[in-house]
Length: 184
Length: 226
Image (tube, rainbow over all chains, first blue to last red; front, side, top):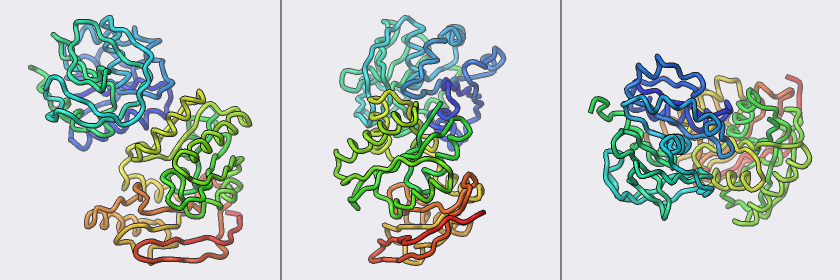
């Protein structure tokens, strides 16, 4: 069971940033439940075999003001995919730095290290972000867009981050993550 | 939050407005009237009827004309949103964007420049799901424009109902047509919706059509009690 984590502080943003991810999972016939990050309970965390932390609106930074709510990430060994805000959360929890760097639109992503996330070496993705992440050295960069680190992975844990929104132009990234062997 | 809706008078902007009402204080509608039939951003048949729609809904309308040239129309949109922000204390803008990255990116950037929230509540919504929601919610929608093969003249002026959704679904399966017209293949005009206080009655219209491209032009309309 996947837990889709909603970090939107505004109900209308759920339709824009969470429902499209849910629709990708539904289409792939993957079981999931969605939880708002403020309501995520220990029993939810315990039952999940992976997590997807979705993005939110450009002006929404409630997730950064409530990073304590994401400390469960330290404790789980199951795979986690952070999308945009989700990547920022993962990176920040592990000591990364957020930089003011806007990227809005369709940009080319170059894969610098192949993983199950994408079979392509280069593709276009949809970005909607006002902050870039400079992760610490516990993370490796899997994909770049110009000088921007836009796909990262923790070196020793199954924590992945996409700065772009794969649900828009690259739903296969979400599908690939959703069928990743959680016991590996 | 006080929000304004980018409003073309078609089904998508009306559904976006409808959804916004559950979460925010909708304070105005914002409409750009493009003089350019090829405009990527704002070309909609019957856009002049937004005045009647605004009256039917009971919301003020911020309307701005644009020549519809690629960059100036964005400046005009920004000016219209700026006016709405100044006049109505706007804190956010809502669009009916479903699939167009081109449109959504441009509105996102304008909102960011103006320190406004931007919401796209229909973003990536399944098109058949969208059409069914419109029909099941009791909207009265007419097809106001067709711009793609194999859409014939017979579609123009027809109501969007369950039968029409099935027809469009079939054309999607057979020809790959976007059933909700998200690539500009179909344009619609909403004449009634659950949040309309009055409905629109079409008094006079013209139909023009040539080679899979045509418009149902409303010449005269009035508001009537529901």
